[in-house]
Length: 296
Image 1: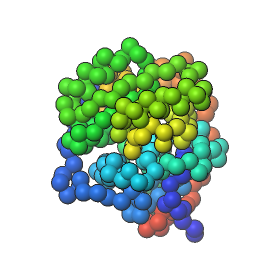
Image 2: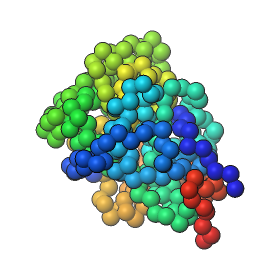
Image 3: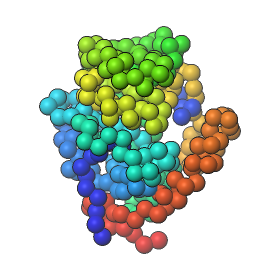
């Protein structure tokens, strides 16, 4: 059976912020972001990297020390992602000078990875991993910028970053209207502002599929070494949105919780778009490098 290459291609209600421990000294050493040690599966038609939080944080920090390489973009793979990209064969910018690290997010993705490998891999939602990432970035004295969310949360966002991660440099919060995001000249100008502001790590919180497409089109122009496509994390950090209780998330039914809270906004995503994406995930058969599929 053929195995997918590890060459990376361009491709929320949240819990209270918990402060994660910084990377141990050994883990903070540079780790090649060529991903030669990170196996990948093709799930739902797109690549998913089999990693844990510690390794993903090491890869992210390594990217901040490798300015000669294209920027590292990180996104969370769930059924919504499969619907917008993998299932539709949309790579949102093939050939763009961005390397993608695709983290397991949704419970169906995690369960399918376990079916295919016999190994349980952790779910790495952006809202779960962002505290640890910010710890590492603050320790290194790097600058973080945020794209997305509303101007109303800017003050709360700045205050939360300042109190939670004192070593962090805040480079700015960009909250363009939707029409600006569809305008190339305005996006070029915004990316130039980010570069001038010295952004090292950019949180792109525009929602799927807009955030991944923006990164593929404009990410390299921002000057950021790392771009995190983390959806509602901006509202999570600003304290505007809270996530489902942990027991709901562990049970793999967080989507039901969200649907109950926002039925008008999310009904089409979960009840119309979700089932075909779920079937595409279940039809996945490829095995990652270093793993053979198990029979179940």
